[in-house]
Length: 328
Image 1 (tube, rainbow, N blue to C red):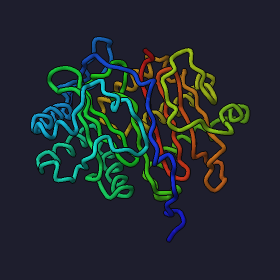
Image 2 (image 1 turned 45 degrees about the vertical axis):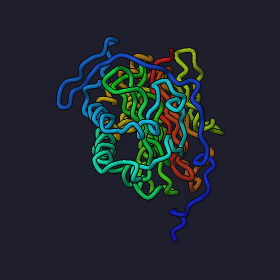
Image 3 (image 1 turned 45 degrees about the horizontal axis):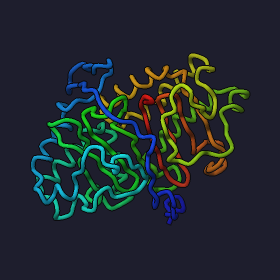
Image 4 (image 1 turned 90 degrees about the vertical axis):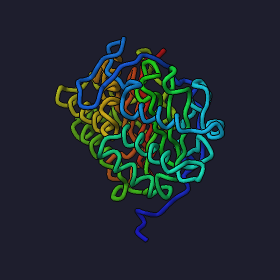
């Protein structure tokens, strides 16, 4: 076996974490498919209950029996909605279980496809197959009741947390922190290594003094991604110190990180970055630990600012956490 494909025990994959800093909800706004973005009351482009995946959530909810609802449905403010992990089952049934009907399984995939881009969908599908035997081994839950107020559909499993909530969560992209990853070791086989390649273009564009600021010895815990606001302390080099060309590279990285997701969520995320002071308020940190092959293509890195956090751990395989919102 090629050692790059060797599996190793990963303690982070086995654990889970509670998000006490999780932000909460509100504001409807829309981006109808094929239309210009509509704005919420705060002026942010965002999904709405009428967005295509959200209407699929409502249809899915409408097909659930009372017995099914007892197992996978919860009040909107239930603590499970605030939990984040690189590997956990939000509810017991898997998508492929006989617990669901064929119609419901199709709706679950329809929702998932709707909250991802075309390229993102293909990458996530490969990841679920490689990591856990396929999309059908993952788990879903519904918080609140679609059509009556705040709601959120959530999918979890190995290296995955995905949300769909029609902008029920105020000042928060994606409805809360999201997680993605891929259990293939090394770079050649990992479907998200292209993000590290893009991020390292920024490092290569830095001069010596800038690299000294950007390069940090040890990374914080990967799940430590609270929104800190303007008073936060962020590791690495301030993007505001960079040249215009270097700042453009950082903006390109942020867009690459968001590219696997639907355009409505990307638009809201970028508006929230702007509300937090823009790209120039971000910081970038590259970590010496976990440098695969000791080649200074940094495999663990972090981008963080008042309204944006991405922690990417690429060694021995990818765990990535994204949290975008305004501090309450």
